Amino acid sequence: MSAADDVGMNDRFDADAGPVVRRRGRPVLGAIAGLFLGIFVAVDLQQFAIRPLDNWSVLGLPTLGLVLGLALGRFAPLRRRPRDEAQATPAAEGTADAS
Image (spheres, rainbow, N blue to C red):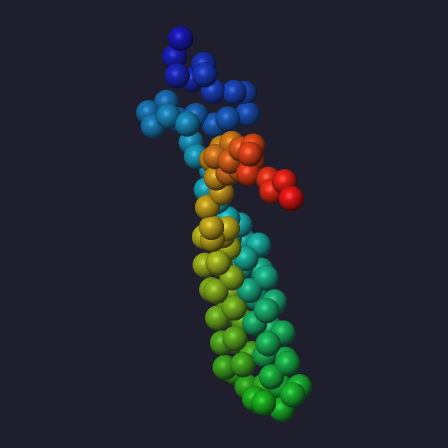
């Protein structure tokens, strides 16, 4: 029995490296959200008369939002999930207060 036989039908497997681990995060979704965030921040700054709608506001803020959203989307979620549900929630036997 080979290592590939242990992997389920829906799992991806690389014969040389073993099971392929799916990367976390959604960089495309983060980039799109960051682009919209940059556009809305530029328009809000103009509407509240804080900054004029110039080239930097129109091109710089959406680009900055795109890069920030891409970076956050790539590394999200920022905290690790527990591998096993049993490790995440220890047995609560005897820990309840009986008052």
